Image (cartoon, rainbow, N blue to C red; front, top):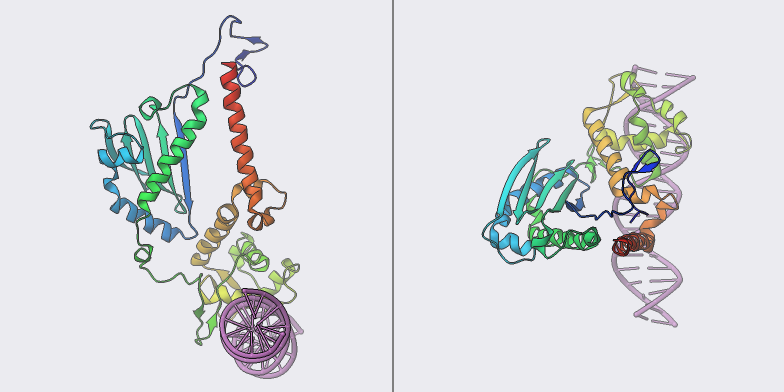
Length: 307
DNA sequence: GACAGCAATCCGGAGCTCGC
DNA sequence: GCGAGCTCCGGATTGCTGTC
């Protein structure tokens, strides 16, 4: 046990050598995240889930989510607001499962285990992994239940102009920006720099800064045209200066943040050894997941031996 | 003179056909 | 069934012209 936890006060241990520490789980939280490319779709879907599946908290249903027998007491549901986002939470025998819209870009489903005994689990810390699998099972069952949504009915607004071709003022088709391309991503990141907010920018200025990505100003104009056609950039009348519009700021921030932290997940960004290869080499992620599980098993086994 | 706009052209990928 | 070759379409580039 000492190899994992130590209680020291200066150089002296506060624990008598005749005593042992036993470790127990007070609360275990297991969450599953569904990440969305579009904040609008994510929000609309979550609103539909709140509306359609508010009765999940009924005793019989919630018992099925937790894979236990129905219990007439201890089942209740709450709706709350966190940072103006709704959160629905269902209680079952002192345990809970909640679902909320996190940052507008992902829906988090989270099982909280406070009373493991009622779920056939135990409190000693060596049951940590069992709690993990149990929590994942609860999350999956709730998500399976919520999967019964016709997504075509959710997105009732007009199509996102940044995702498909639009027509310019002469009815010519302008292709959508594609931030998977290094050149377009570089341009968008450059446009977000504060130095352009005061006086705007010229293509020549961008060409000097982005000389590694663009060979000439025509290439920059071509990419800027995609943003101009969508109202993300506006040209100042009679001048060769452009400015990023409010719409443009919102889209640029959302898209670049989404690409950095969601489309290229943090786990692949952390391990620098070829993050760009991971999409074509899924075995690397699987190996990583295997190592995590292996480590978790070793910790719980070690705890069991030393307890 | 510098820059933006526009049309022509180039290029590459997807889909289809045909022969082996 | 598979691969080579052809066609088409849409995105990207280039070069000329107009405007400030």
